[in-house]
Image 1 (cartoon, rainbow, N blue to C red):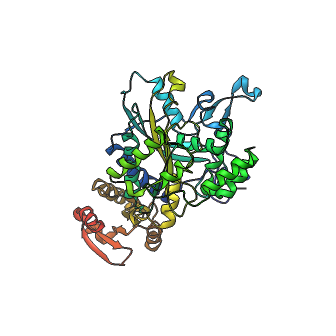
Image 2 (cartoon, rainbow, N blue to C red):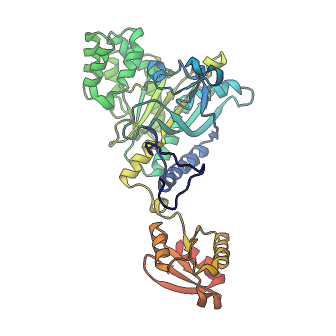
Amino acid sequence: MLPTGWSTWAGEASVVSSTKPPSGTRDFLPEEIRRREYVTRVVRDVYERYGFEPLETPAFENIETLLGKYGEEGNKLIFKILRRGEHEASGEADLALRYDLTVPLARVVAQHQNDLPRLFKRYQIQPVWRADRPARGRFREFFQCDIDSMGSTSPVVEVELLSAISDVLTKLGFDDFVVRLNHRQVLTALLRSFGIPAAQHADALVALDKLDKVGPDGVAREFLERGIEPQATRACRSFFGGGATGAAVSSDWLPRVLQQIPEDGSTAELRQLVELCQEAGGGGRVRVDPSLARGLSYYTGAIMEIAVPDLAGSLGGGGRYDHLIGMFLGRDVPACGFSLGLERIIVVMTERGMFPASVVEDAVDVVVTMWNDRSRSDALALARELRQGGLRVDLYPDSDKLGRQFKHASARRVRFAVIVGDDERAQSSVSIKDLRSGEQQTVPRSDVARHLQARRS
């Protein structure tokens, strides 16, 4: 039986066992949405200032588009969609929810190659889905804020991506983030030097990608569980567990790496990236970290992540993937991208109290009260006038006691309430009550919008 005053759309009530959303997903209440929109406005503004253009792709893809692009670990986390209709009984899947925004981008570039410029820069802010284990800042449904550049092998591409990401975080108020930088071929050479055969590199990279979460001992345990030889595991544990990872940009990282591997094109590329970041003005935040792995298998060159001190994991990451588009197009197109994790940014900003008060408090400028049932038309007209004057207006629908109407306004964190009683109506005026100070004053009705605009600013 439903509570008094409730009704059902279908005429009969049905009991739902739980009102919680599925694990790893969330309902977004108004204040949370305002935080999300604030961050995405900043992200979009910065991305567009760097010349990136917007793109959107479907929520689901053909399953063959996604499978085989992320490595064994990634394939396990893809949400598959079963065939429908007459094929439902087969239990087979032909579609899947997108795992990231990069593989769909590669498909789009191949599909629309004749409609896009040779040097194509796009940004995309959309949700993705992963069948992962939920944790702090980690969800099964979450938004990514991606930028990618296609068509050039120049290291200027990586530097521009990092500059844009740094500008986003700085504009949001972060002052303690670090850019971790590595090169996938440098890491591959290191694994070979430890005695790990090429056939086990994918397993080693998946385990190494968890270093900041489980530590060197946890990575060593996973190495052994994945069948990597104890001697190779010990060599890797010794190198990455020595406290030298994350060394500041300088010559400090290079001698340590060159003790393990000979200098080649990949170490030269990494050194050039460091120099260009310094020349572009962002070198102070960059840290070369030989342990940085990035678990996705499509990376081919430079890889990077953004770290902050009080978050296990990163705020975002990316890298160069020069062969991924070729899987769809039949010829390689150089590409590099970076993805910011919107959810993790919001979690850290909320815990640190970084959002401006206006984002979480000022959703409405003024509440128009209802004096009595006979004043409905007048209240509707006043609300319309205030909205035309550029104000955000909540019209209280019932002729309750004013105290109850003020309580509603205060609960919504609205500063001003306007009252048009019999006296005000006779004098073509409006009373404005400041619910924070308790002050109340009467102004001509023709001036009320200008008066509230002035007091709001």
